[in-house]
Amino acid sequence: MVRMNARFVGIPGLLEPPTVAVVVDVMRAFTVAAWAFAQGAEKIVLAESLDDALALKDGHPDWVALKDGPSAPGFDAVNSPGLMRSMDLGGRTVIQKTTAGTVGALAVKDASLVLCAAFVVAEATARVLRTRGRDGVTFVVTGEDGRADEDLACAQYIARRASGGGDGAAGVEAAGAGTDAADFLRRAAGSRAAAELAEGVRQGVHPDDVALCLELDRFPFAMVATLEGPLMVLRPCDVPSPTEDASL
Picture 1: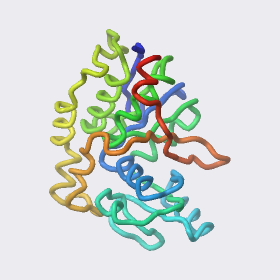
Picture 2: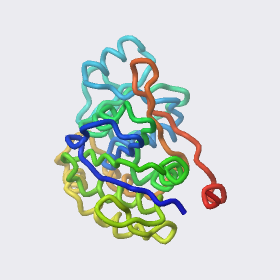
Picture 3: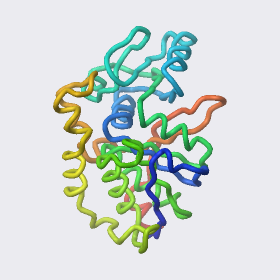
Picture 4: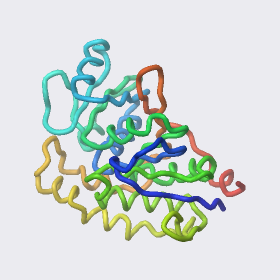
């Protein structure tokens, strides 16, 4: 069992590039990203701004551009897992620009390993950390400058799944395979983001979005973001089997 130092910070707290970063956006950027891969997308390009997303789309008309909020000219989709699950993205490249998730990933683009995560890929993310997160992990809690309880709950859950113990502010207390997800999912369900989605405060929403964001381990892959030339590109990655990571 791996002992792992973990710290949890908002985007403004990223003062220097971490070695290993897990960027968490549950509602909804990285739940949507996971659904895009499940629907066949080859890769997701994380855009710096809406203008950059549109410029990428202009240069690659066959790419699928999506954004937060309501539909807008030049964009093909919105940041909703309920809507994403009906799209056929076989072999396509997706351009994603969101308020928090893509911003957090781009803020740690110089880290040696960047994982993007939500509850739907929690266990797969934890397995990657068991094999590659031995030197400490920075969890980037993207929502509300680090205060979003759905993102913090997910980050803490993944950290506990990935770690065999620790103490103090920088450590993660024992959990490993015995961690119960129920309390973490309950916190996310009671979060401000969940309420805003359910009440229609946010635009570009499907009625199933909250439920889809709270599906634990829906997908078997993790998501790794790397610099490919000037672009930050997110791709799904295979993870060690339970037998393999148990032996580490």
